[in-house]
Image (cartoon, rainbow, N blue to C red; front, side, top):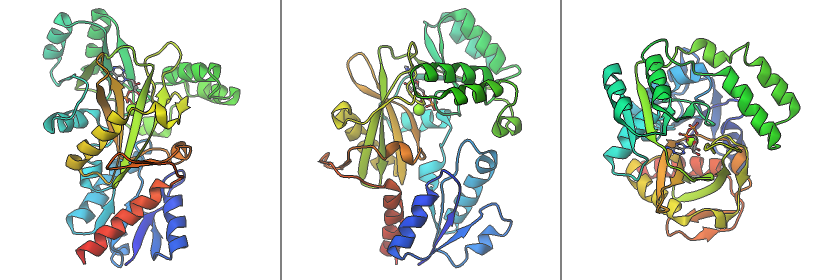
Length: 341
Ligand SMILES: Nc1ncnc2c1ncn2[C@@H]1O[C@H](COP(=O)(O)OP(=O)(O)O)[C@@H](O)[C@H]1O
Ligand SMILES: [Mg+2]
């Protein structure tokens, strides 16, 4: 048995590689962008690639390569069930609705007139989101009808850039004030108003659809629960000062008592149907304290979860120990291989 690992900076691959070294698991490092990648992994049973929504070539290539291999019977991480909806909140809306998961009510329009008709008769505020993006960058509150009409016109006109330099700068100032970003980062973010990210230079504008959600008020945080195989871990992210958005705020609470175990239970239940190898669920709470899923994602930062106090198993038993979820990803895929032998 041999694994192929696509190695990339600040991805899961560092930890996959050290685990393989430690456990004497045979592996080879590959560059998935090589033209002959399929040939290169002919002697392997698995391809593992923590691809990123923020790297343009990952976005255009990763799913094709991974799913082609999976189609041909090779084990991959992330596989189709885990990743087909990655970084696509509209895809997630359909999937979560289809399986009856508890979600925030949402509205998708592919037709300008229908969107305008809806905007003219609905209530406010609503939340507008692009289908992709992380750290709350492409999520905003729509307070009035006139604001909503403007957004719809833009969505069906010139569209939205994937990266908004001004919003990024303003967000960095807020984080500087709350102590999660340095002055150097503020200066750098100022430059981002004039020089966009490599990703945004290549990506085409987002247009031809408009996606809204009901605004769920009075949440000073969101809860993220991640499932890898049959274990779960989580944390609470506080919203930015004077804002409703938690994701990317950098203010994190790791205390296990802060995590409503209802969220862990729902995450396990929903993933029984989704069958993801790795999946993060972001929850907010309605007025009856019922957890609602806002987003799912197979990928996340490696280091952000190192401070978690422990993990839950499916019986909701909590184990207060340190753990490295990237090692579970490898163990799970090896177990699957041995089962199939
Ligand atoms: N419908 C909503 N009502 C209230 N708050 C929301 C809603 N959707 C998202 N949020 C808040 O905004 C944050 C970012 O939204 P999310 O859809 O998870 O985008 P991102 O992909 O950028 O993390 C969430 O962490 C949550 O705190
Ligand atoms: Mg999120």
